[in-house]
Image (cartoon, rainbow, N blue to C red; front, side, top):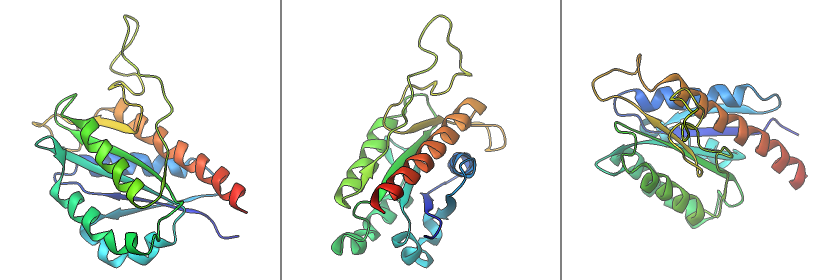
Length: 193
């Protein structure tokens, strides 16, 4: 049996969301027996068949003006050719979003990714963490400091570059998502064998 591949399909307008995608990849790489692959939506046309051959796809995008970036939305629309033949049916799916503010309507973007996965007949994997930083002993250094359940949230200060933001806790949360999807993928593949 070949090594299961998990693709991270992401859009990054200013480099911040690419940092989050790389953190997700690092989490995947922590798990033996799976392979992670980054695919920018700007280069997706060369990777459609590779995506068809994956066991899981993790979606990632920045939130602009309260919604997914246009670059990611274009990818989602282009994926309709896959939808016509249900090429992604029964693949695992997950997602992460990044915005300048702590809320930034991130949940709406994550819901759009979830809806995309359901259109394709995919099986969604959530974050699997309690919220962090939600009590008097909490800290902005906590995993899941922004309190998401459906996927990973990240926040990048708008006046800083991707070398400085998002913070380490958000990158660790993204890595947790990558590990969770990788571990779930191994169980999923064993169950299908």
